[in-house]
Image (cartoon, rainbow, N blue to C red; front, top):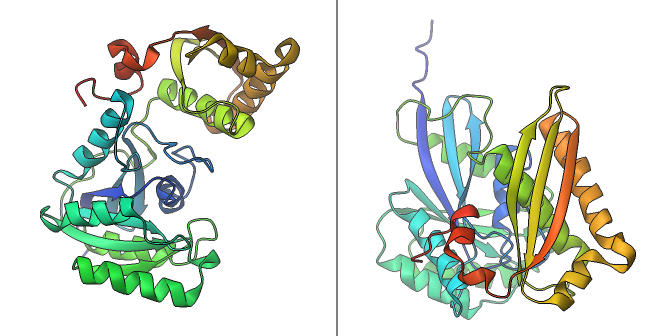
Length: 301
């Protein structure tokens, strides 16, 4: 009989500039949705962990907010969460949008990584829609700035290159017991997942009508006797005009947002969901310590 392979488990910090496709990559590695995505940059606000398994290895994939030059307190907290997640990581995976030009934001991240300890790999994402000649030039520029242990070319949306990346990560996790049960795919609670799904629908349905001057916070999460769950959430906006946008004419938009979020949550949770949304105007919600704690950000960030 061949000797059984020992279990291994490690932390992978997935970092990069906004809109590099980090959340989509984490979802692809896990094999199901654990992080919300949208075409907007900076969709991810707080640190979220996706849990993937390959053979005897458990990969703890930390999906982080995009790193950029922060201006507001909320921005600073998001960037702090991203860099904080890389501390003590077994692998730091820098995800770069392969179809985009080299940006100042990516340059700044690479410069910051030069003096940061830890094993680092480069993941060129969206290669399915990137020009091959530009991709090679971009790769060369990045590897000249920083020595990466490995370079991977992937497409999170098509899955190209993702199995090879997952195999390499699994082979390079430190030996040790798993931190989570085999059937867990995220460290997010159902309560937090529910607010993220609603926030995703806000971004998808309102596009540029409602910038990032909004947040979704949980009010109540109640298990009903029939096995269904009642979820009540508050959508915070900064101005009355934004509240009107979220509500829509005759409340039509908030109904559509709620219906889409309810349907997805029912599929994820595997049971009926009763979702109730309330829109509140709070001019300085992004300066409220309690809101930061609720959405998983460090107030001191």
